[in-house]
Length: 345
Image 1 (tube, helix red, strand yellow):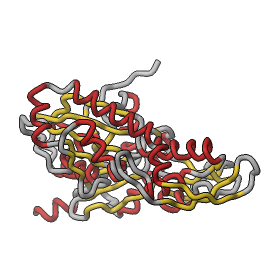
Image 2 (cartoon, helix red, strand yellow):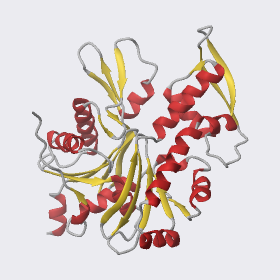
Image 3 (cartoon, one colour):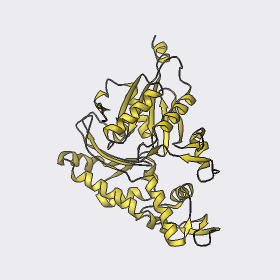
Image 4 (tube, one colour):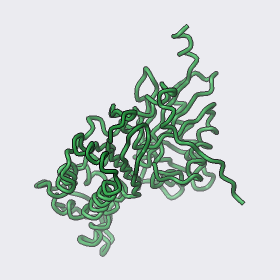
């Protein structure tokens, strides 16, 4: 009976990220991990590609096709495209077609009621029979195996593509949090602007991301590497190649990294002293793709004088935590985000 009931259950956990969408199913693990990008025909809004295929088209499409990221800064900017993207990824999962799934979605902790409603509506429109929303830092903490039910303070920093979520968690709740719309995308943009100013070179987002991953770092990391990059000369209008040093990329990333440090300090200042003592003992946990930036952990250590722990699988913590919640809703009832009715006049 137990295995039969599991067969009749469709539970889907989704980390609906600005940069990547991940889907987790119990007993199967992470079944989808693709960029949150859609390629669309301008003339009739026909979908050309989703995910990895669409990401490869960014900056390379002919005039009649555009690539769109339907989520910006952690929230839905294009409702219809987001809905179609979720539907496409769920189809890839191949769940039981005869039973409407229960869907849990991780969302930034700083979103408005209208933004929460948009996420819930998207899930309902793709056929969910029940929808649960979970704050991203809470999901990340559960994914890391932190004792969120206990009267012990845990501090989590989740640096994603569109938002940086900083939260202090205790007794199944978020005691205080800071949600910054500064994360991986802003780091990419900072590199693009730096190359424009210093070299009159225009590069695309994909190139900026490659630079960040390859030789990007935060001070005090001593980055000795360099990278040859190609772009378009803004003066002559012709393609050219330059070599950029790791130190230059570090300089380009200084502003968004400083903003994240300020957000962490602000959150620590608002933390009750008893919980601050717990954080001193247990340290700060950092997750998300942004936590992979070289030297970021050491910078946090210097700025806060606290131990820093980086997740072994930083990109997966949020979706795995969301999956844990969905598999034991009774135990995690208190962590579910409530949405209010929103009336638009």
